[in-house]
Amino acid sequence: MIEWSLTIGEMNWTHLVNPTHKDIIPFLEKYDLHEIIEQDFLDFTTQDKIDVYDDCIFLVIRFPKYNAHSKKHFSNVMHAILGKSFILTVTSYVTNNIQKIQDTYRAELNEEQSEEFKLSPYYILYKIIDAMYDKALIGLGKFSQDLVRFEDDALDSDFVNEELLSQLLIKKRNAILMKHIISPHTEILRELQIATVNFYAGDLDVYFEDLQYKTDKILSLISIIKENTESLFDVSNTLTIMKTNKVISILTIFTVILGILTRLSGMYGMNVDLPFDDHPWAFTGVCAMMIGAAGIMIVYFRKKKRF
Image (cartoon, rainbow, N blue to C red; front, side, top):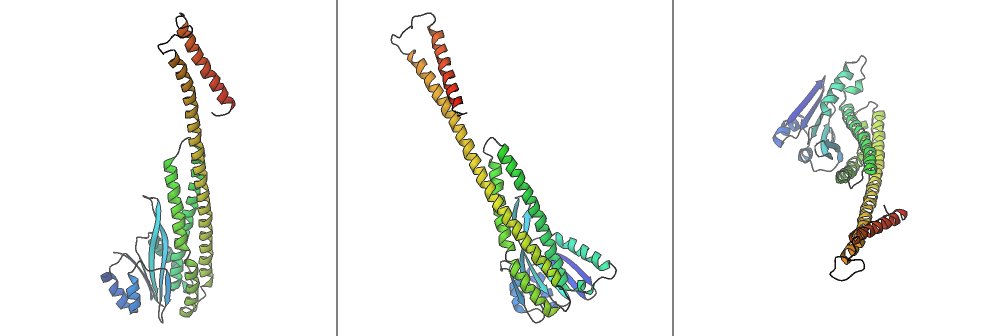
């Protein structure tokens, strides 16, 4: 288990990564949390949801996480419990952004005339989700750049690019997965904004509205990328078919030409009497006929624009 902790005044933020039941029990006892929360807290298969209790808010939300080795995204589940003076977050995988968020949060609090609402756990949750969204937007920007590069590679390649097709399939899978991960956030954020009002008197609406705006932006970009990926995949398939047909056409032309040459050479290879078979220039004449026949066929197919 990995633990990050930050305490400022009466407000405490603890973040745990992949804890066991034994690791989480002290925190559940410390904050006297409901037993239902204890049951859901370590279940990383729980769907996205928000439960509001008398003294806390329990939140389950997923974020996309990128694996550089496999080039695939997967779901990183985050559980969060928000009380009036604490926030406890748990993720199933390491999230480097948490440490960066804590450093940024400390810097904000060190500024002069720091607003009081920044000491609330609800503002910290906003910072976490906002950082995750910013990371997702950066990833989607790189996603779009990759599609442009894939398009150039598809048009420049003279052969079927299996690596390109494989990467396109991965990109398509990633776009679909990210859409499934982010889509439930719209309803979660709406309920969270309503629930926050009952726990905190400060005005945080503008921050949650910003999150909703980013959610819409991410979903819009995902839809565009998904459409572009599918379109590029179709173009790649079409180009592959065209290039394959071109190769087959050329092979067919060579087969026809070689067939005629084989017929001519075969006729004079038979053990029967043929015209000019005893002429001293017979071999030269047969070669000339073969070259002439091949030349005529090449000129014919060139005019037909077969290659």
